[in-house]
Image (cartoon, rainbow, N blue to C red; front, side, top):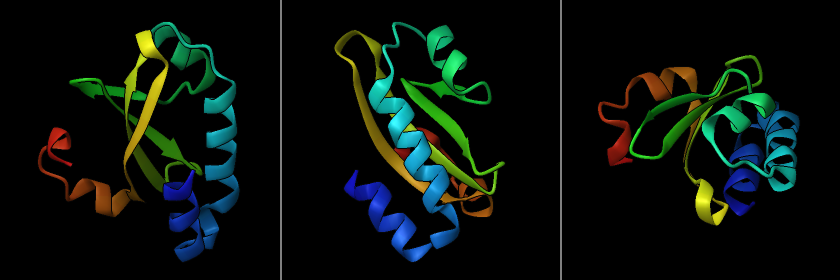
Length: 93
């Protein structure tokens, strides 16, 4: 949660959306990508257990590693859509 807090303290426009995302993730009982899609219908799988979430109507993007078998979510990136577009290889972040 500290990664999210640090980001929204610098970008207050993202606060409510990121808090909502975090609450949904905490409550989730995902077993698969299909389950995740039921919670976040715009999430995309980009390979190597990395998933991209659109935040606040796609103003921001959040990239996380999700391991369904051990119920683990690690945030790798939070940024604006423009910052996300500059990433060359999502697995390198």
